Every structure is written in structure tokens, then in C-alpha cells.
Image (cartoon, rainbow over all chains, first blue to last red; front, side):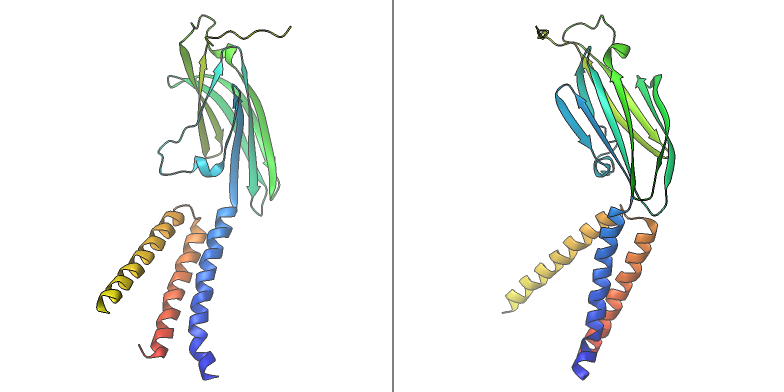
Length: 169
Length: 58
């Protein structure tokens, strides 16, 4: 009995350690997680919430490139890992040289507790880059996604392809 | 023999420093409630460890 009592504090200390690990795991899982999927050119990309939050990289900004004439499809998935529902306005705007060009999308997303919400939009390169864009040059645009306090940015690089693709017969 | 203990000491120190660094990095991403909970449990952890070693006669 005396031995058991002697180890009691050790077990309590181990329980505290286990509790800390559990908090780390639980806290990491809970919260609002946003993921962006898009395909620029032939390269599908997925940017997860963890990547957005990399604090080691200041102003982490993913980028994609597209050939003039292509359309880049975006899918923004909001995963609500909270015990309450989540509702927020989502807006997507296009910027160039720190000047807002246009609103691509403005909508409201509602997700249930531990549910998912999704927003889709398409970025048409012909709408923003000039037709006079010469081969070998490119135009850059910033896509800004605003959802409540969360702000995400992606750089889109539009260029004219040197090799002209054959159109299907 | 003494040299071995010095090496053990360095090993333990590096382990503690490594775990502390990882924990400090992870704490940045914790919510406020998670931070408070972790802090309380850390205090409890060291308090109980202290009590355990006290009972051992250290």
C-alpha cells in the first residue's frame, strides 16, 4: 500500500503530461479550417489551413500560372470543426498593383457544427489580361479571399504560350 | 565514470531543450483556452513530480 501511495504523484504527473498532449491534439483539430483547391494550367493545387498559417513564412502567398484564354476553377472549402454553426460573408476580389479591379464573388456561407461549406468560382484569364499580351510576357493578378477576419491571397500569373496548341480535329 | 555522467547530463539537457522548443512552437497555434489548460497542466505536472521526488527522499 505504501508503494502505491509513493507512486501516486508520479501517476498524477503522467496524467498531467497526457492531458497536455490531448489538449495539443484536440486544439489542433478543432476550429475553422479552410482549404483552397484550384487548377492552373495542368497543375492541380491544394492549399490547406495549416499551410496558410505557416508563421515562419511571412505573408505566405501561393501562386499559379495560366495560359491566356484558360479559365482557372477555384473551390474554397470551409470545414467547421466547432460545436456551433458558422455563418460568414465570403468575398473574392481581383487586385492588380494594389488597385481593386473587380469583385468576382460575394456570398454567404453557412455551415452546421462539424459540417462543411463550399464556394466555387472561375477566374477567366481573358477578362483581366489584355489580348495584346505578347508571347513571353506575363500579367500578374492577386486574388483576395475574405471570409470574416480570415484573408487569403493567391497570385495568378497569366502568360501567352510560346507553343501554340493544336485544336482538336 | 564521471565523464559518462557529464554526457548523460548533456543528453538530458538537449532532450529537454528540444521538447521545450517544439512545445513553444506548437503553443503559438493553440487557442487561448488551450494555452490556459496547458499552463495549468504543466504547473500540475511539475508540482506532482516535485512531490514524487520529495517522497523518494531527494
